[in-house]
Structure formats: structure tokens, C-alpha cells
Image (tube, rainbow, N blue to C red; front, side, top):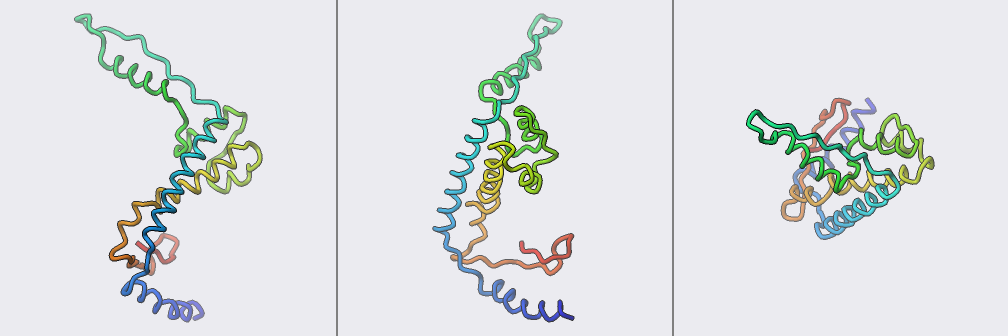
Length: 173
């Protein structure tokens, strides 16, 4: 009963957002998106500077075909390995690579979720930087410039779903 009363109070606001739209300052949105992207680059550089780089990929001994020509697969592998080795760095969007990177500084992480990293805050400077990086990465990618495609005539018209999530909560798409 209490839930029903609360929902009935929310519906006029939801209907208004859908029909009238919500004003969006696209200039400010763009400024903040650019700022978030700049922070991502800055934090990535800081994190990578305090973690040892990934190991180099070894080159394969190039085999030959029956006709004596080098095997293309080996050449292709070696070319990719050389490119990787020249610019090797951790992919901070990769759960597995983050865990591997921290092993290089003696830290064993059971995961890279926010809750896990918060518990380990202070164990290494890169953990604090990684928390900041992940926050700004989410802001720059999920809520970055690409999000502005939803804005029409300076407004966004949200499409609310009453039972839109597995959890049973409302969602907006």
C-alpha cells in the first residue's frame, strides 16, 4: 500500500519527463565529457608508470613449408608479437590483466570490482589511481559524448520501464 502511494506520486513526474523532455546543456555536457576523457588518459599514464609492464611475447622460430617458404602463420604471429612488444602496456579495461599487473608488485587481488579495490585502498598507490580511473572511464564512455545522440532539440525524452530490470526496479532506456 505504501509502495502504491509512492508510485502514484512519481507517475506525474515520469509522464512529464517523457512528454515534455528534460533540458540538457549540451555545451556543459561536452565540456565535462572532454574533461573525463582527459582524466582517463592522465590516470592511465600514472597507473602504468607505477606498475611493471607485461612480459614480452617471445618470437616463434619461423618454420618453412614443403617448398621452403617461411610459414605465413609464424610470420604473422611474430609481426603481432613485435608490435605488442614495442608498445606493451596493461589493458586497464581487462579484469584479468589488472589482476596480473598487480601480481607484479606483490598484490593479489581477488577481483577488480569497486568493493574489492576499496578494501585494498592504501596497499599500493595504483589501487587508488585505478579507482579514480574506473570512475572517470565510466563517465567518459557510458556518459560521454556518445550519450548526446539521445538529445533532440536540447532535450532528452526518457523512456521509463516500470519493471525494466531483473531486480524489479524501474529502468530508463
